[in-house]
Amino acid sequence: MRKRIILITGASGEIGMALIYSLLKRGVQNLVTLDIRPLDEEFIGKATHIQGDICDKALLERLVSEYEVEAIYHLAALLSTRAEFSPETAHRVNVEGTLGLLQLAAEQSEWRGSPVLFIFPSSVAAYGMPTLKIKESFPQVREWEWNYPRTMYGSNKLYCEMLGVYFSDYYRQLAAERPVMLDFRSVRFPGLISAFSMPSGGTSDYGPEMLHAAAKNEPYACFVREDTRIPFMAMPDAINALLKLAGARREDLTRRVYNVTSYSLSAGEFRQWVLKYFPKAQITFQPDHKRQGIVDSWPADMNDHDARRDWGWSPEYDLERSFSDYLIPNIRKRYQG
Image (tube, rainbow, N blue to C red):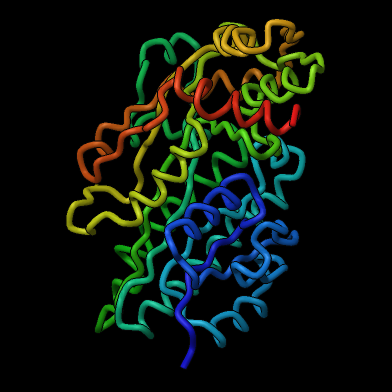
């Protein structure tokens, strides 16, 4: 009999490591992780790690021959800035990799006779505001508004959301007998800030980059204007959102894709918070025209009313607590011992 497992892709990334830690803390023992990189030494022996490419069909076939997959947290992705330099690779990883996993989950759902839970983190990059004036006119966007992404990464995320909806609600809709469908659920994250891992190629990373540079006593030139405003969230709340959505009753959900957010602040305000705790931080602003254009197309904030109503979403870390209780103590410990 095949062992029932929870599969986490992109397990060695910022979200992946935080998610593994939280699941282990909850007593989950049937974790199988997948990443092109080795798993962090902290988790060796606590999860079964498969090192390989998410697009390797032979690898996925071997995986399902050994395991019964009951839930998938699909975190593997090529992030926004890196994706702009290699759009073909981004499409292969972000779209083809997701499509392969959705097909796997669909087949497993039919074989099991019960839905495979498919959790997919999406992004504020799925939005595209055409001008700053329009951005000011829509201070909080809803899930269906301004879905005109300007980046390959945002386009990939938006399309994969649609693929998830298709496989959950319309897959094989012309068949004589509809199969058991997978259960796709997605959260659109704002910019995420982690105290335990370095930023890894996201266009919203100017915030956490400020913090890490200040803690290391290194100068930092921010690549966006001081007045640039987007939403942010501390990593513990991101993990909480994934787990809370995964645990929600299907009958309570009115959407497949939900906004979640915590607070919105400008790059200048972010700098002031960093200076509050690192008064000697050397933070300047040297906007990069191309990256500035991308961030300007993202909304200043996101409306997460539906997530709050349907599955009780509420961030535990507001702006002050994010810095005072999570970011500053842990980042200081990381760099100062």
